[in-house]
Image 1 (cartoon, rainbow, N blue to C red):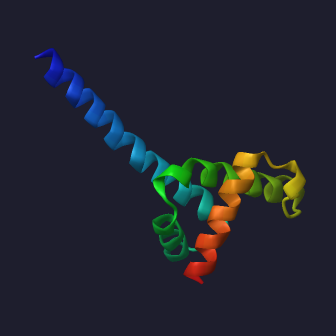
Image 2 (spheres, one colour):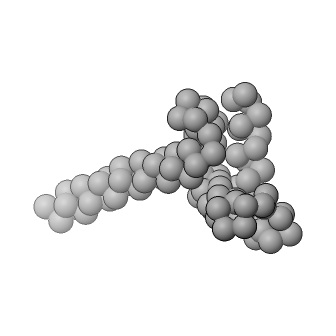
Image 3 (cartoon, rainbow, N blue to C red):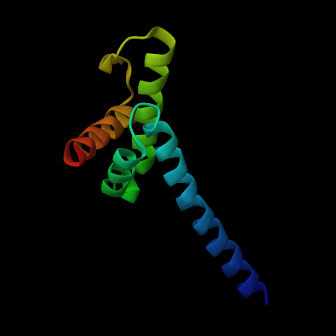
Length: 95
């Protein structure tokens, strides 16, 4: 019984975490791109790179919304830079 409950909880947690990442990526992407483009980008970003992609997109979106200027790459952490590189590569494919 305990194993079944534990297995169900793990399955539920895993099932909820993946769509949350997809939603966060789509939400951040759609600040500057169309839904169709963001769906393409999202499909091209591997699961192990999604978190960094979200971090990079958030930082970029915040920079533009606060200052109206493009993001200065020197202000990015290595994870944010890696994430933005992943998004740019996916975006180039989707154009």
